[in-house]
Image (tube, rainbow, N blue to C red):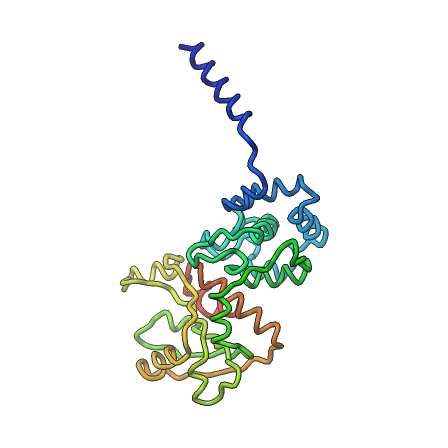
Length: 294
């Protein structure tokens, strides 16, 4: 019996050694971006290997804008961790805790067309703000890394046509305890919209998905991060009807003075966040906190 077990172990080892090593293209096709990065490091002549070397020489993983795109902060021990809790927001298996590896895996993912759930779009289209920022910093060669057509995002961008950003502050509502903990909206002001036409603009809303929770359960979960918080992008007239007409709440609007590239980056990042979630906390990681982090 011992001899048979040893023989089977040796056979399995020999078969594993004889198995062909997956190519870089195969690793990218199946979405194993950590393994693709490791392989590309040994292939400096590949374009991915070249981009990885360039990104590391520039220390892009330490850039405050990259940290902001990941919603990264430091724990009391000084370790990085992202406040995003949805697994599909990260291209690396350890991306939530490793902004360096997440940057490299994001670069690798841009060579793939493998859909990212839940949007079922390729990484270039799913992570528009990351793609734009890395393309600007690393100056992608379009011949070696072609830009993919992102029809869904482009159609949404064309419909919104954002040229400005307005912060909207709704007053609290007595029947909604969570509204007392800093509720805000961000409105993307569309080109040529003024007066009543502003109702056609799009807003970004962040709120807890409380389901049917009420009473003590609602309070405990809201204080301990028991609800998922999600970003939603919806037409302004829908929120206006909800707040001003159905709930009789006052609204204050504050137009921000931002250059167009910043407006575009915020719009792209809102698109990224609409496909994931955060743990919602009434006093800390609430609506105002996360909307201002855009």
